[in-house]
Amino acid sequence: MRTFFKWVVIAFGILVLLLAALVFWMRAGEEEPLDYSALAVELGPDDPEVNGFAYLKSFLNENDPEIPGEFISGYSDDDGSWTDYRLYENWDLNSLQQIVLLNQEFIRGVETAFNRPVFLPDQEFSLANYDFGITNWRKYGILRIFEARALHLSGKSKEAFDRLAILADELKVVSQTGGALLGLIVNLSLLEDLVFELATYQEHVFLPAINWKSFASGFDYEQALPNAFDHAIRQEFQFIFNTLKIAAEGIPDSPARTSKPQLTSQRLLSYVGLRKNRTINEVFLVFLEQSNEAKSSAKERTNSNTAKLSARLDNRAWSDLLNRNPYGEILLTILFPALDATVDRFYFTKTNLSATRISMALQSYYLDQGDLPGNLEDLVPDYLSSIPRDPYDGEPLRYSKEKRIVYSVGNDFFDQGGSDLPFRHVLPEEEDDSEAAEYDHSEPTFPLRFL
Image (cartoon, rainbow, N blue to C red):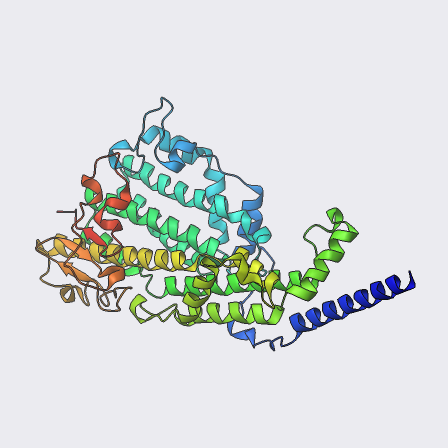
């Protein structure tokens, strides 16, 4: 019997030594933290009387606009039919006036935020402190568009156009406060709504050349959008950094609902299975790369760190977690955003904005001269200070007088003279917009429909 207990004690001792060796192996070789200051985020005061962002956050938390669901989605009707409320022929003055009147206080309240002397995030990004604006901010943009439509249908087309110009300026301000990648996507979506609206105005609303020229002059996102992307990247890194730091310290999300055994196991898992510095360093290098390349054309980007980490996370098998950082790998899988899709959306929207700016300048030139210019250089300096660059290859955006199009080389960087796909306005109603030339990411092409 004593021999049996002796062997049990020896086996237990060996097991303890093996576990200690495993813990030592898991913990050994942790990296030193890098200097993360290169991705610091500038914060403003939390006083809503001074900081428009702080005011906007407070206001949107307490005020919810009322818009019928079919107008937000743009397609469903009460009788079950499908109506695209973006199309000019479906604009209805009475419905639009009712929606705007119902939300007049909300619109004016949001406007107040942009009169403050400062407009900066008042605290580091987290889902809890930014979720206030995701839905309501998008609704505000839609209401602004509705307000402009109602003015136009009431015979006040110039005032309607001015409303869209105000919205463009507001979007530029808000987009550069970040909101991490979630906020960036919302603002890109609103900018795409605005571009669609401007294309509709170009086709259906007569305005003097000076109005198109003025709008084109101010509708410059060549620097603003990369700045917005950079701010979003910085805030996304801060969010992941703080989340990993909390995980490393074993702090539960809901202390009141976390039992002592759960808390102990979570802290043990963090201690043994999470190499915090290594994980944060890896994320930092990816986001620093994205920040440094925010102003580069798509063709100039290297994406080396991003591609390496994305490929590893996308193609991982469970056996890949048998390493010194299993908990860190799991957290990366959960936290790391779909950067490729976001970057693609960023470049496409930037192209859309620049093409719309050129289109408005061309419309102004046409109204003044009675014909389109032979090349875009003829717009400088009277209609544009310079020709917007193609976000994909860094060269000036392309234009064809004969085809009446403005286009980009797209994500294949090959100039094919414009997309062969049909334009959005000639597609059957049941067809998806993604099948249109305007959404051809290999050659985004935009028609000049004001002729």
